Image (cartoon, rainbow, N blue to C red; front, side, top):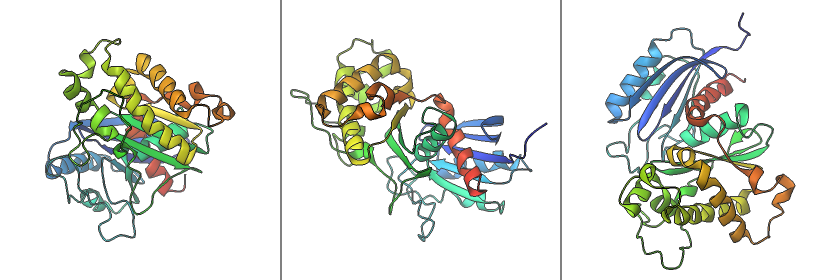
Length: 296
């Protein structure tokens, strides 16, 4: 017999793939996966998937960005200048509004951060972050159970990194070249190495450069927000975790140089961890958004 937890729909709109789930809490009862193509085709297909589930009480959407997430803004739900071709200006929420249900929106990484805090690797933390390293690099930051926003959402992936001496890779970010995303995302690794990261050996020297670039971002995150936990996900973050996570921790420690009392949170081995929810963090994050709109 089920508890009173209602059925909700969660939609993860990713840069490469999108997922719609029907869930009761963290229990996924049905799921639809599809590639992220153009906005019209993709959003219609996701809305049709949600339409199949007549008994949902709310809908949560976690989307790649940048996206307008201030509900007071006239362009709320509209995709901003994004490297995903054809998506700038797309109204992500429009196809879901017709249901007349409570509807929540956040970034995909913000949603994943909520899920890891509720059901995963950041349970019990008042302040934590979720970092995805995949097609892009994004950070969702949670404080006191809510994602942190200003006029937009955090964009830590576009911080400029101090470069390792002798590293001449120009980076691939269309806006900043050698920001962290331009240096250490999946496409950046492939451009740097000449082949995808999945084909690189664990001892390939490229991984040391990637770890250094990610450590630059983590130092900024630790110094600015002092999160109790930083949870890593994404195709690169999870797929290369066995050898990459120790290197990231070591490079972060080297840069901090003993300045922060990280032992108060159990040390960097406790602070910087892999996502317990794995690739379910995104869709379950959208579920968490839907539940939050219901006060749950």
